[in-house]
Image 1 (cartoon, rainbow, N blue to C red):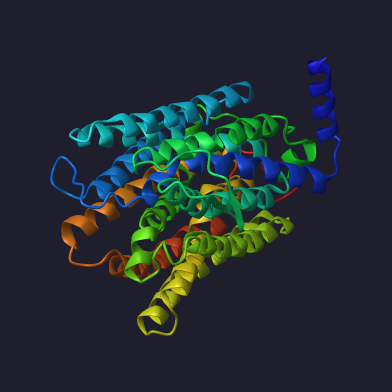
Image 2 (image 1 turned 90 degrees about the vertical axis):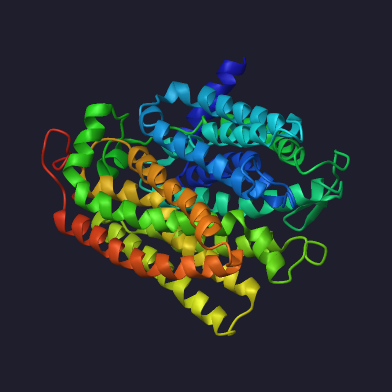
Length: 459
């Protein structure tokens, strides 16, 4: 009976109107990845004030770096694992990865106070599975005529969720009611320590995650029209991955160098929002939803701008638009920082505009940029390979920013360091991005045994 109902549901989805299918895909992908952030980001809402790591440094910085190292390692693993994952393997892998991350958070909570090294290891184990969740969700959305719209909706999830799960985590520590998008929900837990809070936050979101994954898995594969316009998408083996790199290395290297800086900036802002807001006088007691409000503005801007790009049916024009918007995001980062330093805007709006510019530059590398590059070049494969290649390099930038600030610029406040990083990222990023854009837009489709230059619509 259940099998018949499931088959009927899938058939209804396959025959649904494009608008209905888009809305369904966006909703399922959004909720799935939103919930993943409940296992990744709540720990950074705590300050761990006065606690040190095994080497005498700040414990929070070491926990952040440890999780990022695990997350970056996950991206390297995902280059091969996720890009070669079949449709049947996705659900089991998604659920297994989240369970592993939650168990690592429990280990963080159970570690004795005199064993900070165990806590550092727990955060590495937490990041290790989570880095592959994004690619598995992208596999459901890529290769469609409306992939940009779907991916814009998905990308807005991690912008919004990062702020919301931190506000949820901050409420769980004193045992207060839970703020959630203007609502005040009952808290099922008593007051708890900063170390139990991340595991409790993940547990709250686990049931929603499981339902969202099941619903996402009902999404039909791209149809014939999708394949004709966006190129066929298939799992990539080692030989395919090396062919892609050898063919397009000049554009890829310059893009990845820009993304190294963009990710360093984005992650530093994200991990230390609580600390920077406190430096500027926005205390939790006086404003319990400051983080959520900044990120809601950012997510709205990203969704509107990138969600409209699916209307550009020409792959060349679509790729051009992506490079222009990324460059505009980098310019906004510099402009808002200079305006804040000149006291033209307050700290709240600086962090908001800085976030909007940063995410306009960051989002396409994790979704739409490689989607359009494959469509423009007609290379048969999966955008997930390019995405994970970029992320593996990008999170090395994230780790570097933590170390550079704490080892070389510790006399700067976190806000001062973020401002300097924003200006550096904008200046160098624009140069590198220009080189990558010129390469891919000048090269056009490639012929060869892997290309589909004669299939479907011309790019």
